[in-house]
Length: 244
Image 1 (cartoon, rainbow, N blue to C red):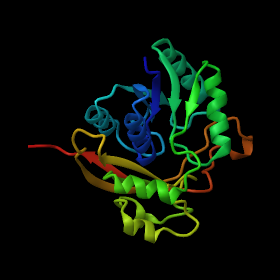
Image 2 (tube, rainbow, N blue to C red):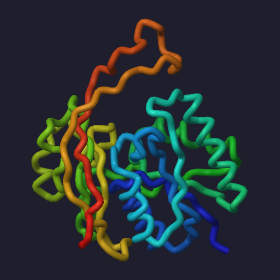
Image 3 (tube, one colour):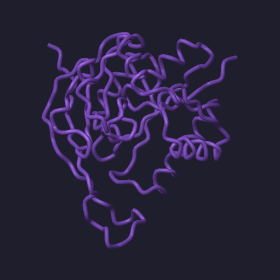
Image 4 (cartoon, rainbow, N blue to C red):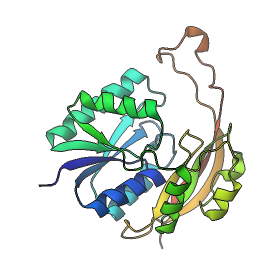
């Protein structure tokens, strides 16, 4: 019997490529996609994609979807409480491993592995230590299609929000931006590719700018309360397409 895995699904390109590789390897049974969303806004955390589109992805992929609802600005303690509860629940359903799309951030990998140990599970990193340009080019060569839904203004300007990722996008990236946005430079929504039964149809909405406010219970020094972080984000809203 193949081990059951949780696919940590952001809705973006790296998690989609991970799912492709897991399915191609055929050594694991994907128990569920797991996505963190803002409880208040009903959007995928950081990516800003509406839950309606997330559900359409899961339907097209033919996989169950598990959603973790988070406060708008969760503390680490709040995040870990929700995550650990979900991990225990999924372990009770037979999950043994958790799949992540991380590429080279050592501290993030160590954090994920430490948290999973609490539930007696292990992590899999199918893209680990591969050059980011190779990862992105493979993603495109396989026929995946993705759009940028969020950019960190420290690295990219407003014009990148809402862009379809293609070979020209790669050429236009500044030299200080990782090709896969591994440092949080940008986030994406995958709407077609070899693992989907049908494309996810959407219309492009408005592009908005947002700075996050430090919450009163985030555990940071009191002098930071209510002040914005030192960067903002441009979000491109995607609207589920209404069919006549």
